[in-house]
Every structure is written in structure tokens, then in C-alpha cells.
Image (cartoon, rainbow, N blue to C red; front, side):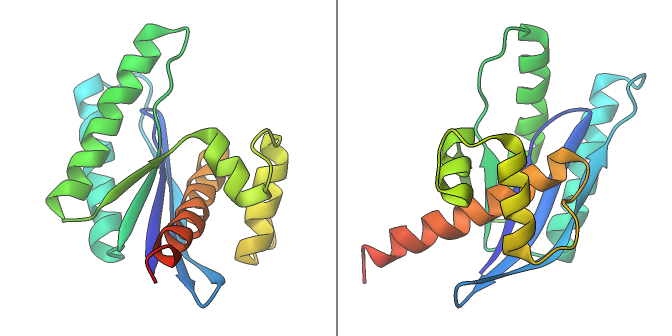
Length: 163
């Protein structure tokens, strides 16, 4: 199963395409979509949408795994991230890709086995599970890959219930 993990943002959107088959993870493609800070916000959303559409079209996933939006102290930042999330969800919907959302705690539990794990632990386990030499940078990319791994684990346990 090919899974696209997305760590949403408006300055940086991490993405990671992972194939999960027979209990093994294979990284296919990963990176970050970045937008210039001085650019008008609608133009930043357009970049996110366009670049993500290219990722979806080049490597069509069976599912998209996205970090659930959590409320921040800075309402402006939260609203901007929510808008970026909107174009991300739109791109998936237009291509018929089902979207699954996970909290940071669910990702930590799934990847490390402990819901209160430190960020570095999650990044290192993600690196190991994918057989990478280094932890992917920026952090948003590693987070996106962890989200893809999380969905593989969760989808597997969901499917097992119905066998």
C-alpha cells in the first residue's frame, strides 16, 4: 500500500511517500514544499496546492495521512495552517485519495510505541523503520514520513479486525 504522509503548514509542508508491503516499509519519495515568507498568502496556498498536486500525480497513493490540527496560542498561525490544510485536503479529494487524520500522540504511539515519546525518538525510529542513513530534514519531512508509518500500522490493525 502506498501512503502519502503530510505534515501541514504554510511556510513548510512536509511530505513522505512510503510503500508498506508484507510488514516492510520502503521510502519512495519525500521532501518539503516551501513558500517564501514575504509572498502574499493566497500565492503561498497556490504553491502548496500546485506542488502537492504534482506529488499526488507522480506517485498516486492509496491513502493520505495528515496530522490533525491542534489549537495553538497564536490564533493567526492556527488559522493560516488550517487554510493550508484546506488546500491539501482539496488536492486529495479531487484525486479520490482517502484522507486519514492522526494526532501527534497517535503518531508517537504507532512509531515508537509510547505516546509521550520525544520528537528525537520518533525521528530516529522513523529513520530506522525506513532504512535511511540519516534522519530526513527538515523536521517536517521526518514528521510526514512518521505519519505515513502511523497510517500503515493503524490501517493494518483496522483491516485485521475484519479478516
